[in-house]
Amino acid sequence: MQRGPEFGEDVDIFRPERWLEADAEPDRRRKMEKTVDIIFGSGRWACLGKSIVYIELNKIFFEVWTHSQGSGQHIPPVLTLNRSKAPS
Image 1 (cartoon, rainbow, N blue to C red):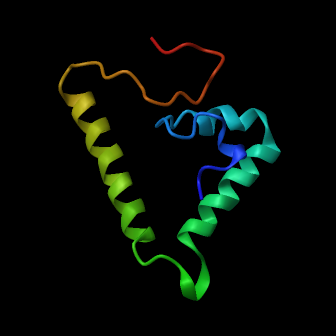
Image 2 (image 1 turned 180 degrees about the vertical axis):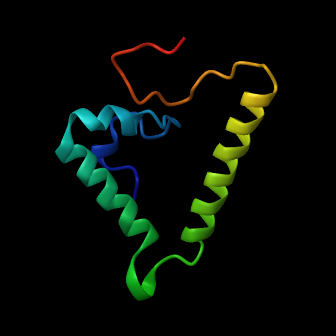
């Protein structure tokens, strides 16, 4: 299902940054989101684990952020929101 042309030619490679690249092409981004929505489903037929996945992702992000703030170590950002400024 996630091997459609809207995901790019390198669909066999784990590349989460493809979602950031799709921001420049709103139609492609919309198609990608629609495909993912089909996978999780909605309404009565929604995936029961969807909310658990979101909770666990939030916990992971929080833990990584918390440990990077208190340890004195600099963990480079995985995603940068401001694409015009390079991460330091």
